[in-house]
Amino acid sequence: MFNRKKSISALKIELKQKKILELLDGMLMSNTDIHFSPTSDEYFILDRDKQVFLLLSGSSIKICNHKYRYEIALSGREVIIFTNRIRKSISSRCTNIKKELFSNEISLIDQIKDLYNE
Image (cartoon, rainbow, N blue to C red; front, side, top):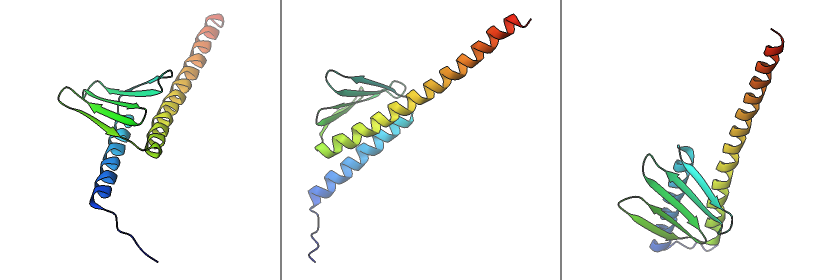
């Protein structure tokens, strides 16, 4: 079979996409705020401590802070991959919030019950 080698520019694009994915994963694992705009289907990831901001919008991703601003065009496949990672992170955070709320509810019920058992 014929094995076609990738061009230098294709390898650079793959490396850039890999680095962006690593940055996105790092931001999602740290103490960041995630906001979603349902009307424009945009995702905002804000790391206020490090002053790094990421916007996934349409077919591009924007990364900026007070010194720089990059906008990188993404393929449809990449948009789906990045969007799914962000949604998975949001879902995980929601699950943690639900668990915390449930434990708070149980604690509150116990406190109220103790009021009547005195």
